[in-house]
Image (cartoon, rainbow, N blue to C red):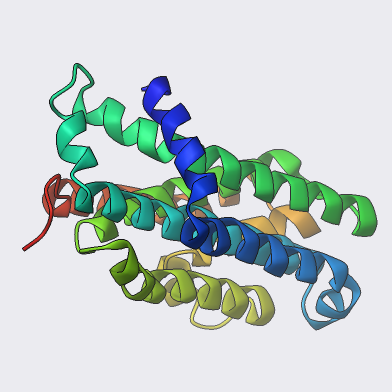
Length: 239
């Protein structure tokens, strides 16, 4: 597993498409939000900025790069060759997903630390951390499911757009408008409950019971995504 992860990490830095879409883009967007935190803070709150940063990194740094990577490895038959080794299916997928996951977490944590340093830290950093991890778990599951529908790395630029842009749009909607109206809809959409949780934990005022309640929709999406991934993921090139 770790040998696969090490090899995949090297390939990530050699692949310009993954490097730009998965790392340069989310860092640039996140840095812009942090740099302009006073403007966006007046529009919504610092919690909104934290949520958008986390969702942007999760959507592009993790989800898009994972789908592109898996589609590429399937297309060149690398996935098929790996299955002939001693590594199990779970170990192969973990090894391929680990570099993108770690790099995305480093990006998100780094930008949130900078945001806290320049504008003020979260009221409940533990809840923020749990919400970010839950969001990334959801994006991992959705990435595995989407990879099953993606024929090539180029095709991934199309198949990943609905989820990646949708999650960011939901985060912006919930972060700016709140959940006073259409509460159930906003919480059930992917990223909605996680955004509400991050906003509340950063700005203050989220109780333990409410935190557990807001985690439920995101964890439900993790279950749905992994169920879809188990049905749709393919190891050999799609015809």
